[in-house]
Length: 191
Image (cartoon, rainbow, N blue to C red; front, side, top):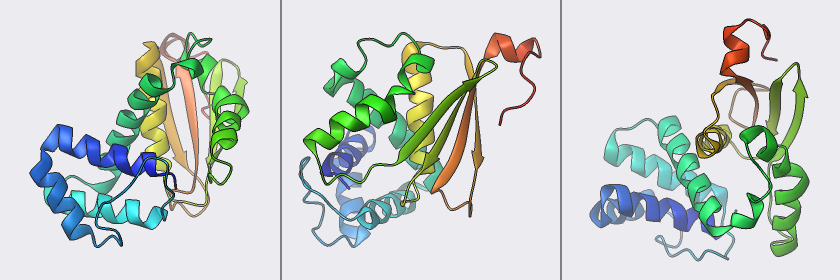
């Protein structure tokens, strides 16, 4: 997993909860390098899980909630760091299908060894369906990213998540339905 994810998590904790909590999270997490991450390095995703578990212990906030909050933070940071990815999108419906077909292609050019999840998108009867699949259990992170994308564009969209497979966070389906369409009963099924 790319180091930018680790550095952003630590930065989020420092900004939101303070350096003291960030230091406690790092010291109690049991990670191999004691929190010394670089944005361009590569690290085992298990260390991110260790950091989040330690953060949950320190704050009492459930892990899924923390990971979704981190996904929201990460989306905001990506929009600041990589504005070129957002130039041609006017809504989440424009942007989210680009994750697999454009953004991940560009990420692989920069980081050929990056292990990225897949997002298979389709639109049916006005509902955008995203099928998330990964070798790592980060559907909560994906949900945070999706919800932050909706907020970023100011869309009035209902987001429904369905865990798939073993329900271990490696596979999920996200259905995004415009609120007006949902209110009028035009879309009855989400999957």
